[in-house]
Amino acid sequence: EGKNDGVRRLYITDTNVGAKSPEYSWNGSSWALTSTFTVRGVLALAAGKGRNDGIVRLYGGSTKWGSGTDTYLREFTWEGSTWTEIVVASLTEQGNYDNAIYWATNDLLVSDVRGDGKFRVYSAGQDGALREFMWTGSGWQETVIAKVPGAVTALSSGAARSGRGGRRS
Image 1 (cartoon, one colour):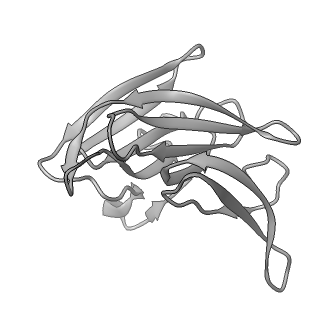
Image 2: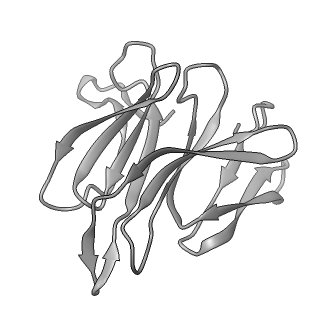
C-alpha cells in the first residue's frame, strides 16, 4: 500500500546507483509491473506508517561504494503522480569490504515494536548497529539500540515468546 490507495504492492530494489525500482501488483492471476521509481543504491526497503500520520511511506537504506562514507536512510512518499524523497538520517560509520569503503543497511522494519501504538523505523546495519528512528512531529530522532561485533543482517518483530508469532508491519 505504498501509494495509500488500498492496493498491495511489491517493491524491489538492487544496489545499482540510480537504478529503477520496479513496483508490482497482483491482478488476480499474475504479477503486473505497474511502475518504477529511481532509487540510489538502496539495499533494504520497507513500507509503513513511520510518522504515525496514517500515510504509508517507503523507507530505503542505501549504501555508498567507493570513496566516501555517506549512506542514508531515505523516506519516499507518493504524491499522486510521483515519489518525493527526503533523507531521514545520514549514517556515516564505515567498514572495509574488499578494500572499498562500505557501509550498508541490511534490513529495515517499520513496526510498533515497543507496543505503545507508535510505529518507528528500525535499521539493521552492516556496521553492527541496530538503530531506531522515531518521528517527533518535526524531525527524526535516532537511537542506537545495540551494537554487535558483526553485521546485523535481519529484523523481525512480534510476540514470538508468547506463541502468537511475529509480524512485519
